[in-house]
Length: 378
Image (cartoon, rainbow, N blue to C red; front, side):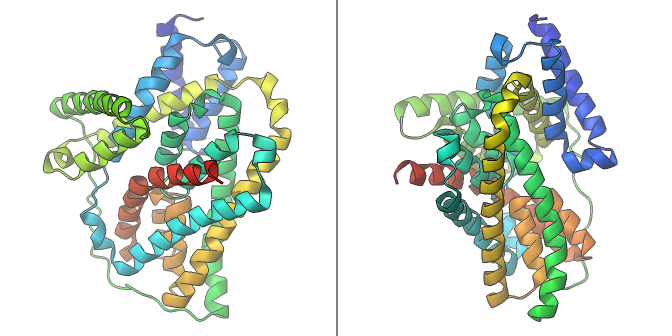
């Protein structure tokens, strides 16, 4: 059972299963990221693979090396120059939403006082939630990795589950509030124009040169970030790695490489599979009070984010659909924002949603660490 080849085989099988189930109607609601955690947790608790109490070296290798490199690969899609195409209104709303997320976390911290239940983990969770509600799971995991939070399997999985529930609730909210607000506070439509977006999205077909280049870059960037982190102890290595990834993403060479996103996404799922393996049923009982605290803290944070972006969006633009899409880009990420734009038949906002999603990936980790810094010094 502890043979690393056998364990890796089982982890890969769980990834395939989660991606397959993630295509179903119910699976789409849960998402493949949460599904891979759940499936791996089941086989770990059935003693088919090692869990937290009898962890093997393979898990440590995935935590220490694979996870950071996966984040690096995902950040290679962040093109900062192209973000200007989103237009000033969408950019402004997204930045307002990002700041609202940060303020929401800090205000919720004062109201809920999660540290009374979560202890020292509360600061890290606050940073993780700031990251994910600015840019997405890339930032969530980047903050978690720096503080070793991913090794707290059941608590990590609980935080992921709460995040998914709140995100789903907010999707419903952003579908609803434009209709309600347009009647209460008469709105207007900005950027309404025939869509010039051609859906010629890169099929992301990887060739051997791209694969070889990506692997070399990933390992090199990780190695350099570790060296620099030792020289500058105050700077987290994951932040250095993220910065290297964002800078490289602006070059023509990187933009021509194929398959980086899928490669990064697969490695993230492998990392999440290990998270699932760390979940032991014996620890679930401890999540009762913790789960309620996590849900309240997260819900109040997102609610405050929503209130602030609605107020600011109403004062300056009153394009309620655009406000909803910008907010969803923060909370749910680019994919759910695109779905929202299509639901509202606002095709002209599809590309801005994608671009704002990449901006969120770029700044989410920084805001996450910023929040932790503030909380550690108050």
